[in-house]
Image 1 (cartoon, rainbow, N blue to C red):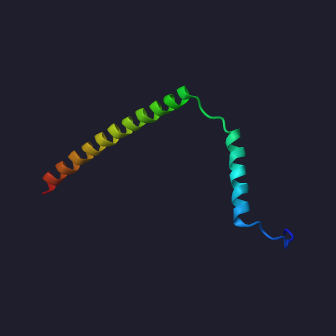
Image 2: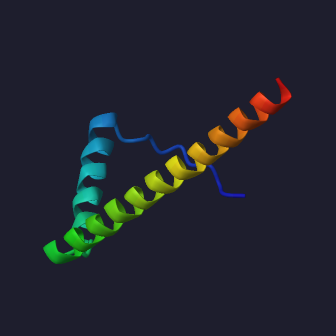
Image 3: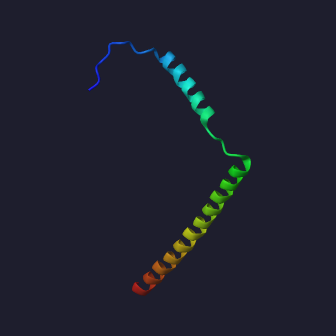
Length: 75
């Protein structure tokens, strides 16, 4: 177990300034994607989204048709 220290915590302003400094340091380490990479990734996301929209619509339409058909037979 760690020994408790009685050192006072820095005030909130000092902690915030330290936090902002740490954020700036981390942002300098980030490897940002190039414009072509961003465009390619965006196109992949949009194509995937379009596929799943069509897939969900198709499955929903089929299930709706089957439930309606069963309702007519049973009713």
